[in-house]
Image 1 (cartoon, rainbow, N blue to C red):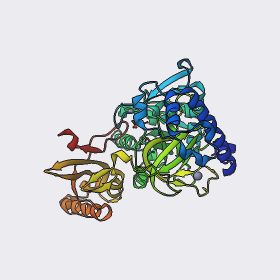
Image 2 (image 1 turned 120 degrees about the horizontal axis):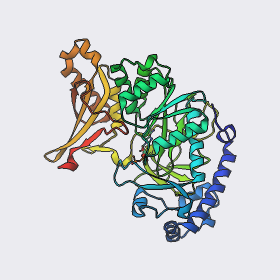
Image 3 (image 1 turned 30 degrees about the vertical axis):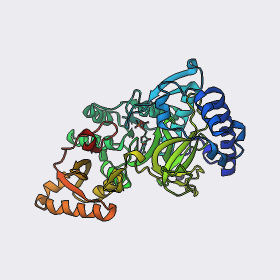
Image 4 (image 1 turned 135 degrees about the horizontal axis):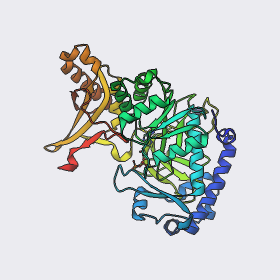
Length: 435
Ligand code: ADP
Ligand code: ZN
């Protein structure tokens, strides 16, 4: 279902005209109100009046996560503090958390975009949404919450944790949709089985999962186990929160970026050069409507590609490919670049394994070594196939070497021995930094 038919299906020329108009207005606003941007524009020898086309954006300076940190906490706010009605902060996955502020209008836009997102995933006002994204400074919980209300669905403000209680409430209330990280969905599924609640037999029909990288293989696994349709949602606190982009239920092939609010580019993360549509690189987003902390060319560090081909759902907004990971958590093992999501694909597609894994990097003398710990499935134990574990280990090792070009030491571990997460999963353990 398309929540805002007119906006989401706007012909590209009209969409681009709207974007240009908003971009020009944005440049005026940040130049007038944010000393940081005024200085950056001046240094680059550019004024807001120099933006005549969307391509002119390439003359504008990038904003990096470090700039938010340097201006901690409120230095990039573009409106007087009394106009800010809420503060959030990033999860701090990769260092000191960054702080963002929202005006009342920003919160309304966010709720609307999240309502569009839930609607794109197939959720309607008749659904009962179990919202297990964390509530608090993290944007996941409140972001999904207000979107659900805007859509008119019923929302259970569950947050993370107390997993046993969660599965019982899902059952008792008859949740038909769930919002959380994909790793937490799997955890809920397992705990459900322990409690005699099989998600397949529950009214649950849709999951809107995001906030961490996951793979298509993981999607299939979750869909099959839980008997639901699983949809990928993307967002980041610096730019807004969840609801920057989402897959449509019709195609589930790339996430539509709400381009009337965000202007995307893909750049080469090393040279900063803008890449062509379809090429893989770092996603850069400009917030076209945000008032509290508007951002010009924000470097997300997320690696993806843009697809401008028409989508069968009828939306005209560009689609971004599933995020493989962040440029700064790419593993470099003996000179070969690997994302944990690439390892995940191989593991999840191998029979006899459960989708719970951890990647450990350590230094062996002067060489980096990679260990992949993955749980075997309970069914493998039940089948009595345990004797062949070594064979299975070397088979996975071979596949990883073949597909990714790195040598990994694969260790199969007992079911349920890898720690479960209630929010973003911590898949990579880097012992090199702890030595
Ligand atoms: P932090 O950067 O501290 O984790 P956020 O909580 O704002 O801060 O998380 C935003 C980040 O989460 C994104 O930049 C991206 O790396 C990751 N992320 C969000 N949604 C997805 C998704 N669907 N797929 C992959 N990664 C995602
Ligand atoms: Zn679509």
